Length: 311
View (cartoon, rainbow, N blue to C red):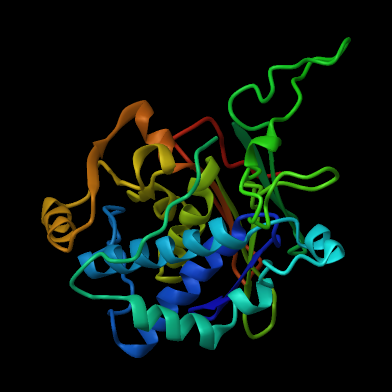
């Protein structure tokens, strides 16, 4: 989808990237219709200037998660089986459809959209860009700590635990079946200029179901003028998984007036996440490329191990 002149690319379902794309497209629709002001970040990495921006992002992210939980599945498998309960990604990402839905469900004064991710998450990522602007966005994970905990004989790794992403609802398109891929959280992202499709940035935000939320917040931050490290450093929100009833966690550093306004709108919020607990907000890596000079500008998340390195 396009946001602020930048195309955001995600891998398709069975990945969850579509949740972030729906959220971005919905936010764009609200900004274009005037329902909320254009998102603007504080240059000192203290977050968004207006509670309206926080509110709109949270509501549109819930809209994205609602669709992802209901429809994300192994599309090729479902098509081969002729399953009738599957909705295409093209339909879910239709700009007019999202715009109509976003403006219909959004209430500027009240949190009303229902949606949250499933239970979660142990992931590594690297972003690489060469001098010609070729880029790789890579994420790998065995899911939920040490995955299955099963180590193949003679090997130094555990087997992944992605089967946990299946549904047991027989009517759900993501129901567990043989030879089928489960709902998958890993979503490397690539951003390109909408007019030329040249590389704008490559990014990731490791962290289970935080990933599409981080991608949306980082994309908006970058396109609002922040450099990669400042975009990474500013505080984030995280709509927590089903084990927490979808409470929105807010990172330390957000103005108390913003928090009060969000609570007044009806958001269920937990604040003050700091130190090691900040890992819930993901671990981002970004490389941005200047389209005129080819200069690369990288940022790496202090919420986890990592670094920015030239070569």
